[in-house]
Each structure stands twice: as structure tokens, then as C-alpha cells.
Amino acid sequence: MDSYYFHRGRRLRRTDVLRSMVRETEIRPQNLIQPYFVVETDDASYEKPISSMPGQSQLSIQKCVERVGRYVDKGLSSILLFGIPAEKDPVGSGAYAADGIVQKAIVAIKKAYPDLLVVTDVCLCEYTSHGHCGLLDDAGVVQNDPTLELLSKTAVSHVQAGADIVAPSDMMDGRVGAIRSALDKSGFTDTPIMSYAVKYASTFYGPFREAAESAPQFGDRKSYQMDPANAREAIREAEADLAEGADFLMVKPAMPYLDVVRRLADSYPTPLAAYQVSGEYSMIMAAVQNGWLDEKGAIMESLLAIKRAGADIIITYFAEAFFDGWKK
Ligand code: PBG
Image (cartoon, rainbow, N blue to C red; front, side, top):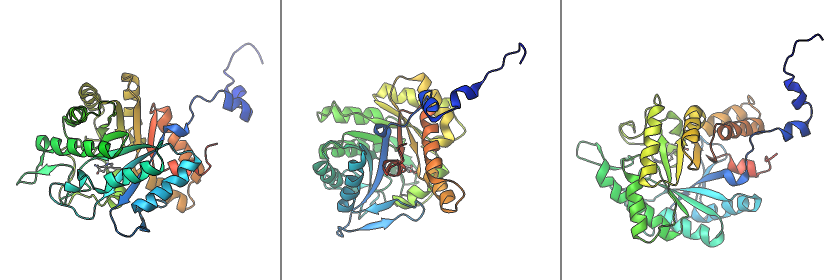
């Protein structure tokens, strides 16, 4: 070769050891949070597979404790809980009942695994008969300010039951501040809030609504969740939540919004979570089941992409698969 230079990128890709030495991003087991759906039922052995999310199930408290235990043994260190109540009503009473499904599940899970980090989703939609995330007025419009009190009660009741972190997902304005002050007044000044700060009105929540039985009975969530077309607005939402006292920020969904994950990661020193939602899981699993994608490869690449974009923490239904031995 004569004198001209070109970059030999292949030099550092020659062997596994070399590639591994220069790898920039890694999934740490401690960064993953696995969601669970707990059902209020007298049948302790209740376990109902969610058809649109192969591998995921609705579980009784007992089944949930068992399943969590299997993964704690493999290294799972944190979970996100959703509850499916036996009864729903217009004001979502089950969300903030001291003996509600999530509250009871927290007690049982913490008793079995005191060191497991239990995060709870704070929202009303699984508990309201109309399926919206807040109270409705006579015209069917979701009422922001009256909802704040119920969300605060929900968060406090979760923490009283033993939750380590509360994660409000309702997208009402001012809820982080309302929840912070309610927690502080109840003496829970040390309980962090993981805010679903940037939550888009996404089609990718479809399978979750089967899993959590929380589809809105009319209309949609576009008057409170964000427009998928907006990225600058994410900055506005994140700043509002930080000012109100959020300890973590979250972007949701993850893969279709990696640009937003990167913007937030670059803009704020706060730990950043990304939620790889139900539809993201279902898409990959459907392709895997058809033989169109390699399971381990697709899962690991998707998690890596979210991490590389700047998320510190990933909420993912693939956490179990990861702990089933796909760490390498
Ligand atoms: C509750 C809530 C939803 C999700 C998390 N919390 C559904 C929604 O907003 O409609 C979606 C999670 C997923 O799709 O995996 N508000």
C-alpha cells in the first residue's frame, strides 16, 4: 500500500476478547425491572396466560410470589406491580383501598423477599369502570385536579403496604407534586418517585390493555398522554416533573422514542428509565414465534439499543428471559 491512510475498524473486531474489551454498553442485571400483573381472586392457583403477550400471565398473589421467587433466585432485583381488581367503579376505589390487590400483593411479596425492590404503578385506569386514568365529569371529560387527590391516596397506600418506589403513569398535570407532598406529610420523605414524565399516547400499549383489563370504555387517552409527534414537549414535561420533585424520569414507549431517551439523558442528571412496553414485547415475540427473528438476538439487541440511547434503567417484559440465562 502506498501512502494514503484509511481507518481499519476491523482491527478491534478481530476476536471475541477484543470486541468485549472495547464494548461501550452493557446490560446490568440491576438495571432491569420486570412488570407483573396481579389479580384479585380467591383462587390461589390462578394463572391466566395473556394471549397477546406470549410468556406473560395474569397471576394470583400466591402465583406471583412463586414466580417472582424463581427469578429472584436467578438475580432479578426489581419488579413493577400492576393490579387487576375484582370490582371496578367510577372513582377507582380499588386503587387506594388499604386491602386493594396491589397493597396485598406488596405485603406478600415483601414478606417473602424483603430485599426485592418493589415499584408500583400509580394510576386509576385498571380500577375505574370507564377505564380512564382519572375522574370523569358529566360530559365524560377527565378531570385533572380532582384526580390528584386520589392518585396521592393511591401512592401513600402503596408505600404504607411496603412499596419502595411509586411510579405515577396517569399523566395528570401536577401529580408528581401532589404525590410528593402527600408522601412527605405521611412521613415517607425517603420514598422516591419514578415519574412516567414522558408518556406518549401510543398504539403499542394495546396488549397491556388486555393484560391489565384497562382499555378505556370510550374515547382514547390523547387528552392526557403526549402526541407521538412531539419531542421538544418532552423537555417541558421532564422539567415540570423535576421541579415537582421527581427522582427518576421515564420515557415510554422505548424503541420508537429512542431520540427522546437520548435528549433526556443529555439534558438531565436524573436517573432515566425507559419502558419497553407490551406492544414492543409482542412484536418481537410474534416474529420469534414465526421463526422470523432469533429470540435471544432480538431481545438483547433491543435492550442494548435502549441502554445505548441513554436509559439507565429498562422496564421490560424480557427481564425474565434475560435472567433465564441470556446474560452473555
Ligand atoms: C396505566 C399504564 C399503561 C401502561 C403502563 N401503565 C397503559 C396505558 O396508559 O394505557 C402501558 C404498559 C405497557 O404497554 O406495557 N396507565
